[in-house]
Length: 440
Image (cartoon, rainbow, N blue to C red; front, side):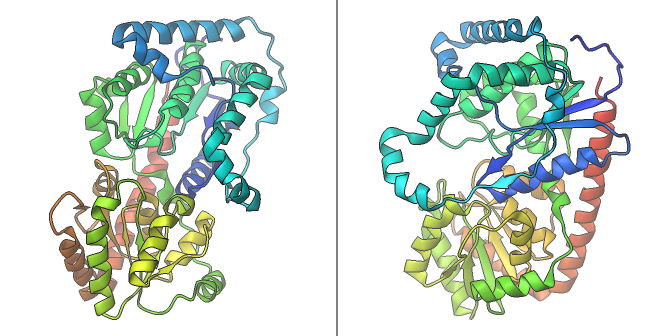
């Protein structure tokens, strides 16, 4: 199917993370789907999770070819995948199967706990993914490409995967490969709601190739826009819109808050801290100094996280050293907002703990753990406090000063924050409606 310029959009495919251990991703994926389904124009909306059937496509294979030949190989892969589906008789009812579904929050169960030592030895999760690809990968891949081939617009939500953390870039790379095929088949493509933080030069090279082919790139902050411009993504395709997770604001459920406070034994004047487990060890001493001073001021500390399965070891370590509380489990995003609403202040270097605390009407001290993601969000919504970078000496003292600033004018701070969040929420809705309507 070749898209005709100015052809109206009727069928939208949303590709996002439908099963996640991070309530930030759970919330933003859910809100993205809701936003599209609630637009004034009625669209047919299909929702897909991450692709199966791309196991043997890796960015390392491209890297081994070098920059120029690697991109040639990428184009050959796209050509091969286009041929798989170009002349395939796609079932007409496939799109009707792929309806919107709730974004599930993964919680490790007893079986996972038992298998975890074995998984470390045999790379269990990767083995399962490989088996899925071998058994029914091609069939699923062709079905998905059929759906994309017959759609008018694809919206891909990277859900925090374009990041500088160590590990494989293959998950987002395979998704980019799939939507590059969709683009070659004639679909319009939007990459939505993300920050772009990369340090690897070859990965930047591949991202430039992919993003330059797409119709619109929606980033959450101006710093990501400047980064993409530096790696030669056409500036006309880049749009800055604040994080769609800011639409997650529910009416605080007071009965649920009371139950959570009881379950977690949260007392008055409790401060929440959220710490991303990546690269935290070099800053742990300053986090400790921050905790000790707050405890001297008779504040209770509870460790919280929107990615508790990843971060809990840090919480347990701090509990052993400083006697702080650690939240008992991972809550869904609406209950996580309810939990945060019971706190006096939150200190966070987790992006979506910061977002959800703001939505819970709780002031946040923003700590930047990486390149600029948290700082970028704070700038995008004109947050009243400056972001604290942990590469500055004695940053914990700056955090303590910000804490005093908040406590001195607590109610005015909340009022100022509500006004700015409301403006951001309005901007998000208007921007997405305009972008989707005018993507030709």
